[in-house]
Length: 254
Image (cartoon, rainbow, N blue to C red; front, side, top):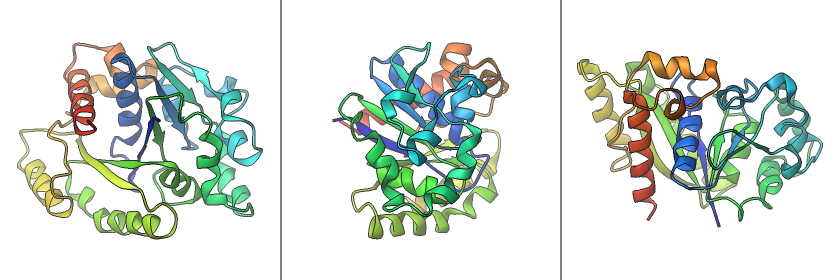
């Protein structure tokens, strides 16, 4: 059975989608059959792997709201071993439409149940907020990865994040565990970066990945070409960093 990982931080702009796309691509490149699930209405994960959102016939909206099967909306990307359940702008209305559904917090878990055995890893990109879509992702997941920007304001939401995970475990998914914290937009020249890392390690002892994702123009460019960084600029620092992070992720999971 594959492992399902939600990539979540209720604070936006921390490299959540970038991490989803590049983690999934790096896993696929290592021979792991990987499924990306985009439940963020912005759909940046979908476009980040070269899928034109305007041409998507069925999306995770149709899967969650109208019970279209996950297999019917799944798209094989041009990248090795990488598949996606794409998002669309319609997903913005899913919060309201799901609110009247019975077992609304388990809709995603139920929808992907038939696919869990087919994939080595399932990576879920969540919206940067704690609504029904994010709760669905955390209920469907086995573990959680928290991308965290190496800046002071990143610390502000940490206590809320800890509380959120505790609530999900108590009420919806007792098996949910924190897989790890990934530091993004890292700049070794800034003393503040190390201060943030030290502070986070107090919250999550032994949970931070040693690999840190550097701030880079290349990683900002890659989505506009619809490519993960390991395919867009495979010899760049962030490409090496994401591959190293995935090595660390896999080693921890052994």
